[in-house]
Image 1 (cartoon, helix red, strand yellow):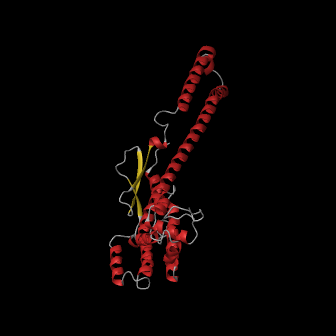
Image 2 (spheres, helix red, strand yellow):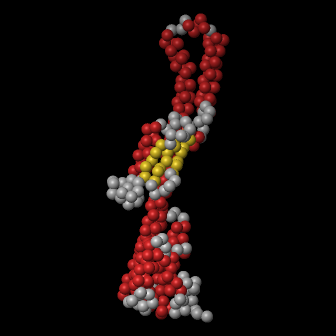
Image 3 (cartoon, helix red, strand yellow):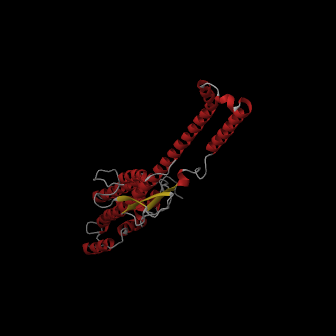
Length: 317
């Protein structure tokens, strides 16, 4: 089978470009309208026996490249197929045997004096086995071509899925940064409700504004860390911890809002995280995950205390 032509690669390009199209512009891709897009470019520096293409995604500094060589698409085409060699060998032996038969047994003068109908019948019977042989060989060769086409299409589909997953992951991590800021903002107002003028008045509005400025300067988890530190101070006081998180209607609203937002983030992580590594990292390795687990524990949705590691149903020593 011939190697994929430029029209085949253009079809791949159109398919992958459709998968990477930005929502709001007629495609099922990922990202927000007007912010990011993906494009597929054919590589011009690929060897002559290689089909190569890449996706340039504005969310990633490194383009994703996928390439297929003739060895990948046609792993057995570096020499003549054994079926063809067999057919040529049998055909040569058969024709040689026929010539020997005509020369030694029939004799060329006798053969040439035969009626035209008899000569035609002779050739029909002589070449019928060869015709059947090459029909069988052609059938198996066609099966081989179909298998090679199926293998090439399967490789292209897998590559397209990997490229799409890469784009979706890049979009997710950009979304993660935005949602982390949103979660810290929720924690900030929760912190203000506890320690600000409407709480125990430990900080003033000016001090709160300074903390907000520090958070806006790149410390996206400042208030989540402050809230988890405050929760840790109540590790031996369950009622005080409940008061910290759900003591007033405003605190309850902030805690529930934080929990709902973080759960949406976990759901989005599940769509791009095939091995749950991102989800586990969010839950156990981030300030937002720790605060989320504290809220779930205090609201009796999770028996495991993330601060002490003990279960709420375990007997106290």
